Amino acid sequence: MPAPAEVPLDFGGAVLEVVSAIPRGRVMTYGDVAAQLGSRGARAVGRVMAIEGSGLPWWRVVRADGRPPAGHEREALAHYRAEGTALLVPARPDGTGSDPDPLSYRLNLRAARWSPS
DNA sequence: CAGTTGACAGTCC
DNA sequence: GGGACTGCCAACT
Image (cartoon, rainbow, N blue to C red; front, top):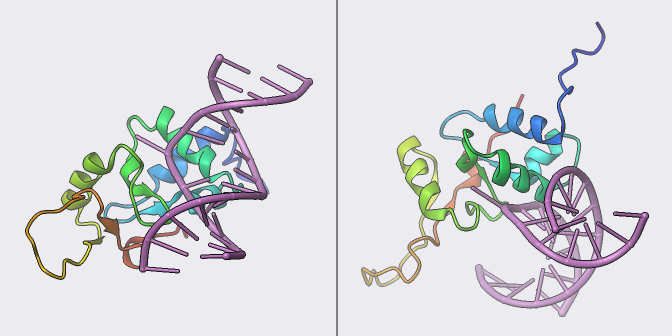
């Protein structure tokens, strides 16, 4: 068979498939996931995660800025530290000791960004 | 059927 | 380097 029906699922089904294929310690941007689906609806991907994201490593899907989904930065951070994902901490010149935004961290996409073979 | 929303991305200032 | 605007796609009202 010339074409292994790998896309009998809907858009959401395909998203779940790609996100579920992301290895531990790696991350993908919404745009990359959408690109794998042959679509550019990065926003559509995000919405699928918000709905069907339950039961999936949604924290492995981050924005192009290297920031986790809005409203879940704290939850995602716990997963990143637990999986050893490459994180970039905002450099503190003085080291005041207090972070105005502890959730202002970013992921090192240059090292953690992964793409399916 | 049309408008609005939304776990975004890319470009311009 | 950071902020604002526009563009895209899919689902909801």
